Length: 113
Length: 111
Image 1 (spheres, helix red, strand yellow):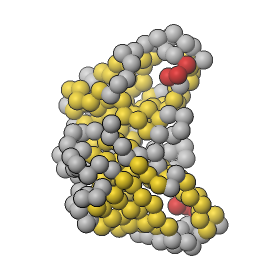
Image 2 (cartoon, rainbow over the protein chains, first blue to last red):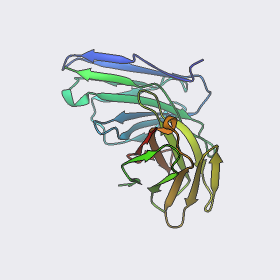
Image 3 (cartoon, rainbow over the protein chains, first blue to last red):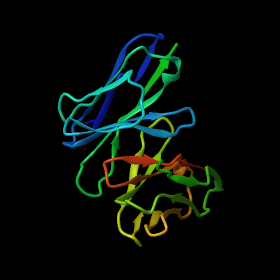
């Protein structure tokens, strides 16, 4: 059973389109994250949700909008895609309380052409 | 801006060598320090989460130490094997839920 699953794994789309990446975790975790892996393989935090509530919003363009319908899901919607949005996006989750590790999804490679 | 620095950026060792790398982080507003192992084409997987100053954790040939007062952690690998080749990430967890990652140390173990 996959603990944190992202769909799709690969996404190729044209500039200007709107697309979504879905993330689901079956671990019962309270907190979910979106990270962007840049061209230098650096994992940069974008958003964090706790029990459907946005708690971290880094300086990410307004074209990126996270949505959490319930605490097991955190989807990432991107409007008006740009070439610079091409990257691998990772979803992660963890339990809020205590010293607990994050569990990552397998990543979604987004290519904007 | 919260800086989490890792050094070296990359490292090549021979099979059987022992090695170590460093993670430095802010000493204020500290809650936990995480270490992850990230193999190519896979997702990061947790190795350790440490919270107490002086903490030392071990998993097989890999161990880690933590100094929260001076803001650094070391990861040690004893008797490196080719399967240890990966990028090792540390992440600083402050008072919020934010997990801020360093840029990683890429380890290559040559047979």
